[in-house]
Length: 142
Image (cartoon, rainbow, N blue to C red; front, side, top):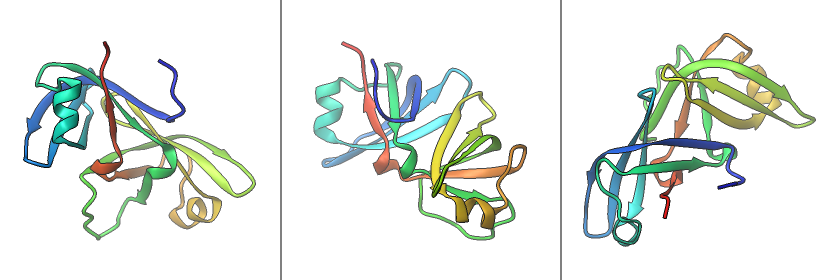
């Protein structure tokens, strides 16, 4: 499967909390990184989502926000993935920042060059990726 989303996390569903409208689905990668998605109850049924089923979580890089370490704010984003900047590609306006997570996954964020400078981001610096669970798209094989 080829997709345009920069972030593709493969794993197994490790938790599923159903509801009448939406469900919260937790996907754990082979390295132990956890991604939480909010999907509709009808998607749970049509995709056959269940604990133990293999799935992929897709997140477009512009949907990922970054936070520098030492921040004393709390956020409502369900996915708060702490890691270390492993690569940074600067463009004319934006940069692609790669954040290596402890389990081996890599999260890419596209943020402005001004934000990179303000946050002091560079390779080796700790940072946290913030991803709303509603921005995570789940897919399963046939």
